[in-house]
Length: 290
Image 1 (cartoon, rainbow, N blue to C red):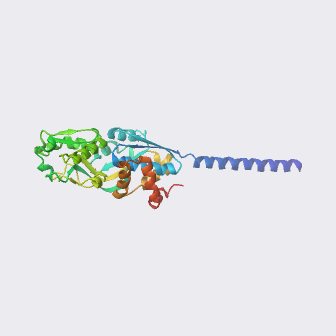
Image 2 (image 1 turned 90 degrees about the vertical axis):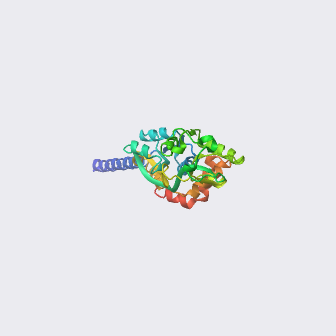
Image 3 (image 1 turned 60 degrees about the vertical axis):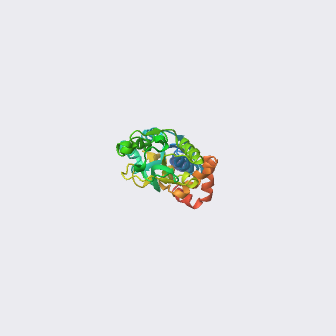
């Protein structure tokens, strides 16, 4: 009888150990999700704003967030190789269509995060031109562009193939920041300047600008900004994946962040300010995070 009692006690103890082990395994499985997130972006004003906001939301959820600035082409390649986890910087359906076509089998499309975007040639409203076809020798036949790897730059460099009046024109490449600096200086002196522009962007709030009509449609119609993730993110980082998938805001939202940055705020601080003022919107992005 004593042996039988000891046997039952031992059996019960062993059973408890099994349950404890199973519980630990379950907890381990729950904690298996990666808590590191690497978001890539191009250093355009829109993408600086959006990436810092999303990154800060993830950081507030406890993630170890890295924001990696890259050239546009390298950003897409890094995502396709799984070297970064995601990005919120895809301008579609036209601007980044070549990259989507090239990497579509290696990346995951999470849909649009902002609608009503646009790209094209932009001039101060005081210039007496309203269409690309009106251009003759304005601004010394020079268009001030952004980084060389941008699809908008490639489109502009080839514009003379569609617009014969642009034969002999030059596109000066630099960066988004250098472009807006040149625009600011030209407007201060009431000089002619033509830039590759996009909206939403703070410059349309700061200055009286206009897009030049594009009758041949080389810059496309209305665009949206989309979110993409690497393959496998949903499985090993479902929380971050859901935030990226749920991320959506308006041109007014992003312009408010960009404007704060333009006025001198650090991008991280501008992101924190917007998040604090828009908790209801952020809660929609994070509602699926357990």
